[in-house]
Length: 113
Image 1 (tube, rainbow, N blue to C red):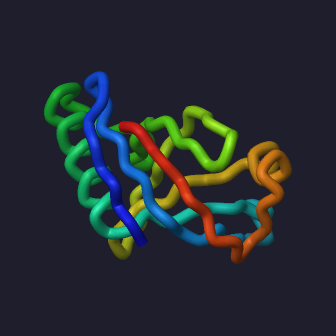
Image 2 (cartoon, rainbow, N blue to C red):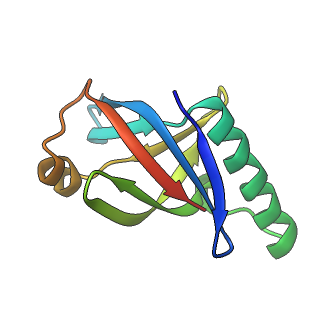
């Protein structure tokens, strides 16, 4: 997993390689997520902490708003902290279809916080 980090225009950008994972629950349906590698996860931890210090509050579920790009698709979404450490980012059906992605695919992603 490569973390090519840079700061441009006030936004911190991170590029990395990850795998698309499918999660299924009887009560919540099927979701697709990508995990965030450790160096990028640490940057998201720091950004979430700064948000809490600046606003005095935590976002819903501890989430962090960001912009992500996979292939030609770019969108605004939220990353969600995992209980065991790290972050997860949902990938919608619209993006999966546009990029021809299925669970288990290796993905090159770039996010901006």
